[in-house]
Amino acid sequence: MNWDDTGPDTDERLDERLVDADADGEDTAVEAALRPKDLDEFVGQEKVREQLDLVLKAALARGATADHVLLSGAPGLGKTTLSMIIAAEMGAPIRITSGPAIQHAGDLAAILSSLQEGEVLFLDEIHRMSRPAEEMLYMAMEDFRVDVIVGKGPGATAIPLELPPFTLVGATTRAGLLPPPLRDRFGFTGHMEFYAPAELERVIHRSARLLDVAIDADGAAEIAGRSRGTPRIANRLLRRVRDYAQVKADGRIDRTVAAAALKVYEVDARGLDRLDRAVLGALLKLFGGGPVGLSTLAVAVGEERETVEEVAEPFLVREGLLARTPRGRVATPAAWTHLGLVPPSHGGKGQQGLFGA
Image 1 (cartoon, helix red, strand yellow):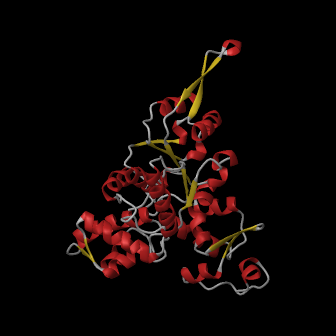
Image 2 (image 1 turned 30 degrees about the vertical axis):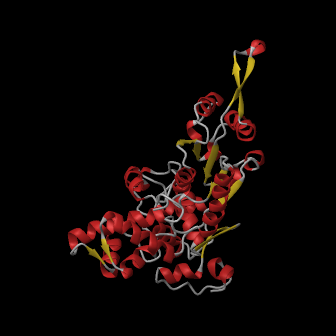
């Protein structure tokens, strides 16, 4: 229900990971129908919603455009959805583009010069915008003006172009990559947090109603617990469980059906998939829990180093199953428990020396 973002290419074998938070073509098509239309309908992110509601209502009361908004957080948490809600709440049209699409200052100037008064410009992956365009954006956000350079060399002339007041909504998965001058020009900054299981259950029940899927509370809880705190993943799992229920059951989703379906798709009770378990399994079975270097671990699971580091490790670290240390990757006691393995009894080395297991 609340989702967004695309991410970097990693490995073609991982393009169809069921627990990948980045959107694929099917997600984009389905999400258009499932997105909430206003803040009251949006599930989760209570603080961000409350603060944003005040910003928008105050702007409407003044008869002014809303302050520029920066939304940060992991993919799939609702940044794109909130940008559309901002436009809807302000009664304004929305223009959607992304940082990678703006490679030259002229690209940005063309977009800005065509904006209507009060229009919302949603700039996804704003941290990936080119530096010349970024510098032009400073003036546009602050003074609603850009200088268009005509000509080249000594004869070049800067022509000032006045812009109508507009609201920029920037979205980023890496707020730390934004330069301070750009961050400072946003009047409101909201950080999107991962969702609690109870919030994801509400997301799943709402999506099930819109998709005309029969699901009970236990079935929703089973899916929510495997969704990695991310609404986009919850909706994707719901669709796959729906398929299983239609073919293998009577079309209704309960805990048993949900668990059986997700077993088929290799998503376990904590939301780990084949790649996650392969990384943990190699770390535990081949290297005694570590420490082991990233490159060695990647070779052991037959994946690229970047795939292990950027795709598998963030969730494993967040779940407390793996730790990054100066000496290498180390499994935590929870990792041994999750895979049903017994830690080796040698003391003072590897995982035992670091975690005291």
